[in-house]
Length: 361
Image (cartoon, rainbow, N blue to C red; front, side):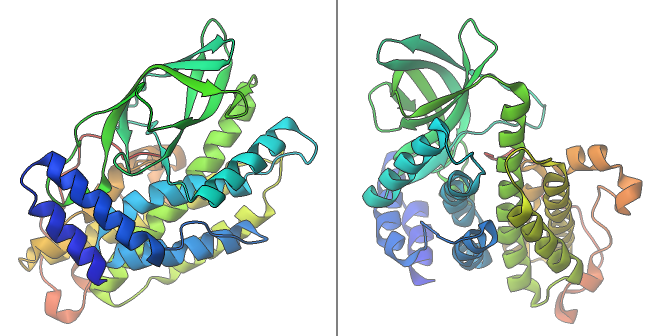
């Protein structure tokens, strides 16, 4: 896409980060009308397929930008599709929030919740007369320069309960830090974010008193992220290889069937395991493709493919959960020569270096 190439050029040629962010915001505003940012559908699979058109198109040519846009699309899809009892306050709040997002064409962001070292620092929510107050810092927030609303969970002070929030990101009680990455990954627009006494009014948060319910919501959200991250990287691999794997297609179809069949109170485990297997398969394919490209001196084409193994859920964690033997795969990429067109075939070299974080999910 011509506009994508313009974004890459304008951001990379900016004199400093402030100028790069300004260029990024302008470019995204020009690109937005060409993207399907508010998918609809009667089934979750239909919603995903609409969103997938956007991330596939971006992912084929620009991984970081596709990942950034997915940080809006996947939480939007989760909000729209998560099963909620018909007669409930949560369903009403969801309907009002979705209407606001669509009517005002808002951009969502989602804070990261997983790190490669497995540590997290929860945000703290304190009850107040006009809602709740949020304090704390999240290290990873994609779309930090352009998002309007940020979705996150916080720990309710002096309680075992959690709070799910949709908060205004453009307030003076929200502080956006410097970009976390340099080079091409600047286009993910990822920064730390700090909340200092940030107000979230009633109707924009939901107290979740049950750990099992919170875990189910988190797992459902993670399954959607697996689908999106697999779609993005598989589109890039297909662009480079001109071929697609049958196993990836089968896992994708199975994931979408399970997504449509999932209902409130059901076991989210089968859905999460299947989407995790899909993500893992695409990760192995992406890493092997990167190895083969690098062996031919095509490092630029391979750039970014290795990041998928550390993006939630990290490959190592999936392998520990399933057991590598049961999946018939190893954590290191398999010999890659046969995965590329003949002109690119050669002996394998080390893959992309592992980043020190996992992207937001």
